[in-house]
Every structure is written in structure tokens, then in C-alpha cells.
Length: 276
Length: 276
Image (cartoon, rainbow over all chains, first blue to last red; front, side):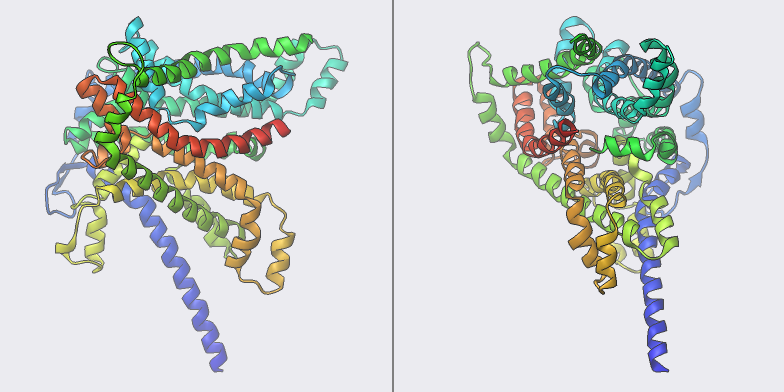
């Protein structure tokens, strides 16, 4: 009898431990986000209040007033991100295809070149790109920022594109060629559509990277190009936590959306190849 | 022969971008850090860097190493439970829970932690409310601890994602056999599963290590005062003194720290990619 009781006690202890750990993790993950939400809707919040003394939408109206800084920054950010995606895909799709399908001379060396930027801190790169751009008048221009973001996103885009092409079954292309399709036809009607989910994923990655990028923009974009991350940073350093939190929320929405959707675009086989 | 050159042609725009926006700035960084104002070569900028910033260098390395270790521990624990845990509902919940910070940018992480870990932040309120600390014992965590928390919060999900994927794809025969022979789950994880996914763990941690070394926004927002991380010093040298020489010397020193990790990563990655 007492054996069963001890057994049940152990089971309950295990359940309680499990629930406690999950609860702790949930607090660690969502606590900081909840704090951000509170700040975004706090009209007045001073020490030592546990919660804001007054909630309201005053700061939201301030952020979203038609000709306000935030709306301008949002437009700038999205425009830069779209240009960056276009640039990256134009360069990464052919490169990814070549890496996945064609024989390349100096293959090892080329692969090393595409791995290197990931393995090196990007601060020296940004600092010196800013100097180069200063010489040619690209500092503080949208085009300059796009180039910086694109050089950063390109490596990832090439790897995902190459993984996406490598995951396409080659026998389908051979079949199309045997039925008389030209190389270009078989690429456009077989390979490209099958690789599309992976390519879309790489486009989304690049878009997000560009939207969230801070360091490069900090050095190259100032003072004329203020993207959302820079606006958020300035507000936060200026002590305006409400504006900073609202801007941070705007940046969070696409990040979390992508996190929830990522597996729909990146099939396990593509993800597996990216990790390697 | 024809196909070789076709491949090279397709990949050349990507190589060009990497060359101009990665290799050239890197070379400029080396030149600028070694060039004397009056022309000729000198090590003075490195001497000055060590003179002014030795503490910050040690601070940076300690923070990044500590964060890397914590990231590895968290990732092993979560991925391990996802692979070997017996409670189905807990696994589902955990899988949904752990990945929220995955694509949240560093700058937003910085802002979120800035409010959460502050003296008047939610963490302290919850600790006081739960009776875990006295109200007077509440302290701000916005120093090295805040940076470590922000780094682990942001990077652990990334390594967990890679690790859980790798663990899911290994042969379960051995771990099932060990379980049948009565080995506890934590031993199966550490002695049978983990050795088989060592490579993936290594890549994930090294990529995080390099990334954290060059993050500017988090230390700038959480702990901008001395001692701080080297990225803040670089930004300060440039924005306050226009001193690119010392900034670049600092960059190269942090590159040296990273190259140790990068070497491990590249060796691993090239072996796998070229091998296939």
C-alpha cells in the first residue's frame, strides 16, 4: 500500500517539477515581451509603480501621425528592405543554381568565400564600408544602405538558394530534357517552381535581416537615412520608452510572424542543408 | 568545359559583391590599423588600443564565452527534452515555446531587456511579489549580467533549433537500447545522443560566438559605460574622435578572437560541403 502511495507521490512531484520548469521558461520568454507591451500602452509610469499609473494611446497617435517620424521611418525601412531583396535574389539565384548544379572551377575556394562572411565579425566591414562610401558620396543615401544590407544578406541568400536547388530531384529535369525541353525551359518550368518555397524563404530572410539591421545603418545611413531600428534606438537613448517600445513592437510583428511560419516555407530537407 | 565557365559566369556577380563589400573593407581595415599618420607602417594604434581598452577586451571575451557556454547548456537541455522527453504534451508546449525569440532582432532584444531587467522592471516586481527578494534588495541587472541575459535569450533558440533538428535525424536504435537496459534519460542524452550531434552544436555555438562579438546595439543599450564591450569602444572612437586607426585596430583584435572560433567552423563546414 505504502509503495503505491510513494509511487503516486513521485509521479506528482515529477508533474509539479515539469509544470514549474515550463512555467519558468514561459516567464523568461514572455516576461520581457509583456514588459514591452506595458510600456507601449503606458501613458504615465514612474517609480515605484508596479504597473503604469495611466494607460492610453497618446503615444500611438504621436507615432502614427501622418507626417511623423515613425511613419517616415517605416516607409524608408520597407522600401530599403524591398530593394535589398530584389538585389540579393538577382545575384543569389544564379549563384545558388551554379553551386548546386554546375561544375565550378576552384569550387573549394568559392565555397570558402561564401562561408567567410558568416564566420567573421561584421563590425570592421561596416566601419570601412562607411569610409569607402564617404569617399564616393554614398553615405547617408538609401542606395548606400541597400548595398550594405545586401552584402550582409547575400551570403545567407546564396546558401538557402543553393540548398533549395539541391533539394530538387534532378531526374525530373532529365525527364523534361528527354521530352525535348530546352535547358532554359526545363529550368523555368521544372526547377524554378520546385525550388520556389526555398527561394521565398530566402527572400523573407533577407527582408527581415534588412528590416532589423542596425550596425551597418548606424555607420552608413546617418544622419539622413533613419530606419525603424535607428528611430527606436534614438528614442530609447533619449529616454522615451513609450516611443521606443511602440517602434520595437512594429519590428516584432514580422519577426514573430516569420517564426510561426518558417517551417511552412523551409521544408526540413532545406533547413537541414542550411544548418550544415 | 563549357558548363564550367557557365557556372563561373552565373556565380561571378555574387563573387563580385563579396569582393567589393567584404574583402576590400577587410583589407582596408588591416591597412588603416597599421598605417602611421605621416605614412609608413606602425604598431602604435595597437599599442594605444591595449593601453586604453585592455579591460574592455577581457570584459568582452568573458561575456561572450560565458554566454556561449550558457547557450550550449540551454540548447542541449531543450533539444534533449524535445528528443527524449516522454511527456508528449510537454514536448509540444516546449517546441512551441522555446522559439519565440528566434527572429527577434538584437536591437529589440536590447530594448526589451532594458525595461525588463531594470531596477523598476518586471523581473524585480515579480521577484518581490513572489516573496523571493526583499523590496530593498532589488537591483538593476543592466550591467554585464544584462548583456549575458540578452545574448542567451536571443541566441539559445537558434542553437536549439539546429540541435533539435540534428537530434531528430539520428538513428534511435542506440538510445532505445540504452533505455531498455535501464540507463536514465540524462545519461542517454549526454553519452549517446550528444556525441552524435557534436558537429552541429559546435557550428551553432561558434556562429553565435562570432555574432555576439560584433553586436553593437545590445551593449550600447544595456551597458554603455566602462567597462563595456569592444564594439561600443569602436563606435565611440569613430563618432567622438574620428579615429579610424584605433577603431580598426580594435576591430582586428576582436577579429583575432573570432578567428579562433571561425577556424573551427570553417574547417567543419568546408569538410562537409566539399565532401558532398
